[in-house]
Structures are given as structure tokens and as C-alpha cells.
Image 1 (tube, helix red, strand yellow):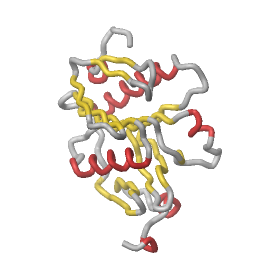
Image 2: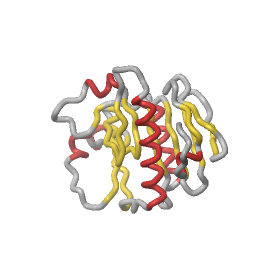
Image 3: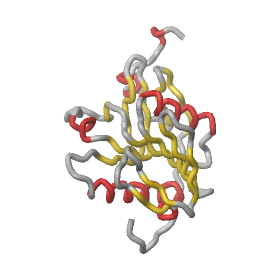
Image 4: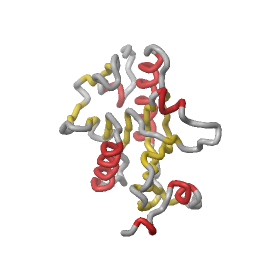
Length: 192
């Protein structure tokens, strides 16, 4: 495909909101019918956002921001990649570069979290993970609410799988983050 036929982020953002879920990966639009979120998906998104928000509140400033609900991000330019991320943590440096006119966050998150839905295909998820890692996302979590697992991807490392009987940490990327995987999938009275 020649670069003349690639779409820019600006052109992508001008597309109509017509019930089609779209991502722009290296200038090429990927479309699929809009995913109908269900209670398992939204519960997990809420739980993970809470865990990350509590961790972020405990960090010394300046801190970044946690965004949810298909957080729009422009990951790269020429060719452009623009995606919606279920949950993303952006550093303070990335957030400081945003302006009042910014509708999508222009920059790469430190952490991208995708919560699987029944309609997600392995190929689509793999493409997203590969794109995240290739643009410099440090950490990618793929959360499966049905099997209650979290798959962790890091640049230069093989994936790791955690189940609901284990604990996870943020390592050097998210220092001080430590939580029970089970807390992502159910309420508990335990503290993080």
C-alpha cells in the first residue's frame, strides 16, 4: 500500500460516529461492529481503574493520569496509529504536552490495559498488543474476565500469565504497585 492511500489521525477523527468500532493502525483503518459491553467487562474496568488510581495517589508527584472508557490515544505519526484503550496510564510528561484543544491524548501510555469481550478475536488482540509494544508502551495487560487471568506483555520479554490465585506487581515500570489478581474480578474487604 502506498503512503498516498494511508489515512492520517486528523482524517480518522473526522469519520462519522456511526456505530462502527474503528482503530487506525499505521494509517490503515480497522473496523468491526461496535462491541456491546457487558457487566463482566465494565466491572473489571472499574476494578482495575480503582487499583491503578489508588496506586497513583500513593506516588510522589508529579504523577500521570489513568484514563478509561476507550481512552483515545494517538500512538504514532506518519503513518498514524490511533486507538481506543480500555484503561491507560499516561506519565506526567505525556499529559503535560496536551493542550486545551487535545481531544485524544497524543502520546504513548506507560500501561495499556485491554479487557477481553466475547467478540474479541485473537488476531485483533495480537495486532493491538504488537502495535502497543512497537510504539513504546512499556507494559500491556490483557485481562480475561471469564477465565480470570491477566496476560502481561513487556517489550523484550515473553508474555507472563497470572491467575486469580496470584499477586501482581508493577515492577520497575509501576513501582510500588502490588495487588491480588482476584481483586480485579471480585470485591474484597482486603486492602491493596
